[in-house]
Length: 185
Image (cartoon, rainbow, N blue to C red; front, side, top):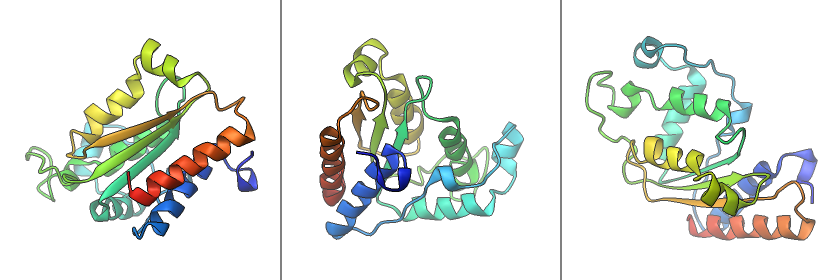
């Protein structure tokens, strides 16, 4: 089952989650990181002192608005895609996380009280990623980024063997994400 319009499986999963959330009575806003145009940060000074680009400021407003975040990405070279990491570096700047107090101030956990669902797709079996490779990308995202900024609980779904996956199995995963979205879990 190829996602509609030749889109990636991650996009089909995101759409299913959003459809389920909307059907469950939840408000939904979507940030498609792959479609955003923003520069990567190149220094600590950029991260701490420069104002965020308009597209990043809008994403920050969306994160501040949200009660539940869903992050869906394919495993690339054992980790999250660089563009997603660059996006997180941009949106989680000190001025945003301290409520405008800026660098050197203690973070107020501006995103405290939100929960998340992390969905990672991969070519290898999910159990191999979890047990042999230690799910380090997932653990890093949960511990070093989301928990650090006050987001939790952080639930996850690992979807392995996507290249050889049957249409029936893909449809089952899409339906599973739709059900999770309906419950906002």
